[in-house]
Image (cartoon, rainbow, N blue to C red; front, top):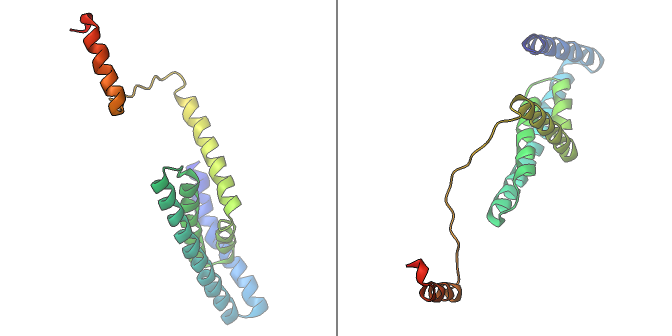
Length: 158
């Protein structure tokens, strides 16, 4: 796995340069550079707008006691999209643009969680998890009064 990652890190800049050279030959070097800057600027502004919206959704869900899972997935992949859009090149811009599409982000999140659960569950299938804690019941005044009367009526509680 580390060898594959290393080869991808080496191959990505070479592929980006090849694409930039090909496009530069077609539309000119200055136009290619301007197009790279334009795609980065537009993409990052979209990331910012969607990121603010995701942050507001997370605040609302947190305030209302709702689930944060989807918002966390959106936020994570928006951060990755921002990195891809900031890196100059058309391949990374394409990947960043794909990550700007909410169903793509959710699909990747579900796929990632499924892989995590499968691998995590397979590594320790019979492990017992013990969670220590305390709890208490909240009673209304009426229920508390009834409980005190019951305690008075039963002599074995003393």
